[in-house]
Length: 263
Ligand SMILES: [Ca+2]
Ligand SMILES: [Ca+2]
Ligand SMILES: [Ca+2]
Ligand SMILES: [Ca+2]
Image (cartoon, rainbow, N blue to C red; front, side, top):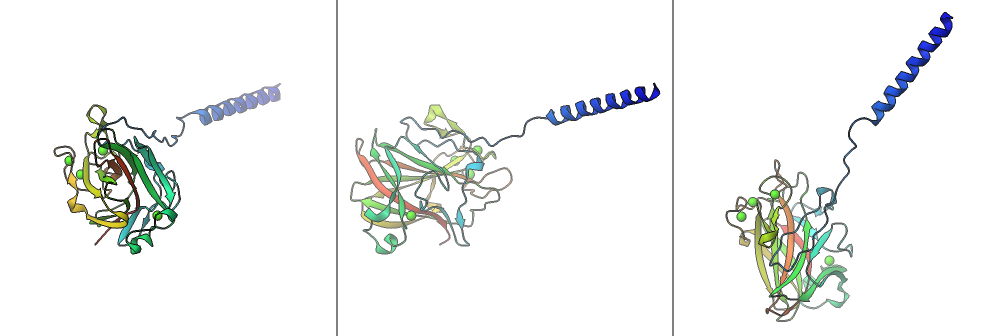
């Protein structure tokens, strides 16, 4: 009898132990999985800032001592190795460079196999554009003083390329925007420059970062701070916004080799 009771006690103990183990395994909150925000498309607003993907979507960029390539489009895709979102523009496509050979021969030799074609019709000057998220943990871009971009123009009325750089001033790795104010950033700086594309073929532009103008004085800290430091992601986004040469005009040019460098 004693043996039976002992066996029963052992069995009960085993069952209880098993129940505990099972409930222990099922306990706790599920692990967080990466969530990538949808890339918003923007209504016909003037120069929208984009909603960025989660940092997990950031692609590796090539960085050497003296320069940092943001994109050379050599993957032939707008989706990899980094994702470019598009807004409003009719055509934003990575295209073979075989049809784009003219202009400065030194530049033409260095654009590789693919470039980004930006083409579309204006709604009140504005055509739309593309953007990408560039922030990375520990990335210090503050040593660069110049932005380089190769542009293939299609003659005098190719349009204007507005380059926007958005840095993180409130330390959350995101650009918060006000949809009621043409998606203007509410807490971070937007620095911009405009390039009038009025030539035929390839040309390389080297724009000192000092020539970029803070487009939202009083919002952000009004200082270019591209380095990831503390809670700030540093430079979060670059956007390419196309503006037509006329209110109802067209834009048509290619861009390539977007690079930060030290001159
Ligand atoms: Ca290229
Ligand atoms: Ca922010
Ligand atoms: Ca500002
Ligand atoms: Ca800033």
